Length: 102
Ligand SMILES: [Zn+2]
Image (cartoon, rainbow, N blue to C red; front, side, top):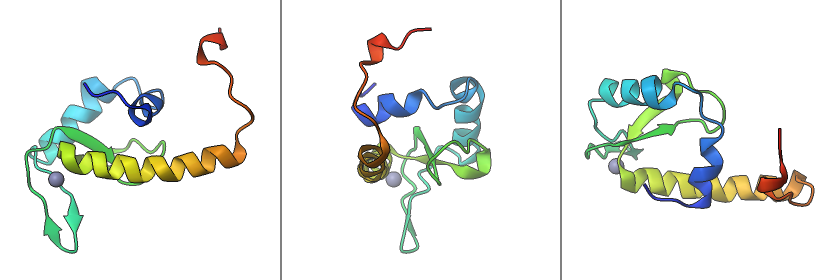
């Protein structure tokens, strides 16, 4: 799949059953249709992405929605920019990920 820092950052926050249960559940519930709603116009394209409506660690199905690749990319980049602002404000200097051991 596509890489990108935003996606790889987020993956560590996903629960263990994300790929086995939550993700397929939401895609089926939403009938594999993109639920992106812009001013009352719902996209409705084939969806193969699952998005957090409110970004964070709320992985309940009511906070999840199916999105097409296009709209998921738009939403992720918006959230990514916001997250980057928050992170730079509060984070101490970077540690190399490879140095964080058990
Ligand atoms: Zn869409």
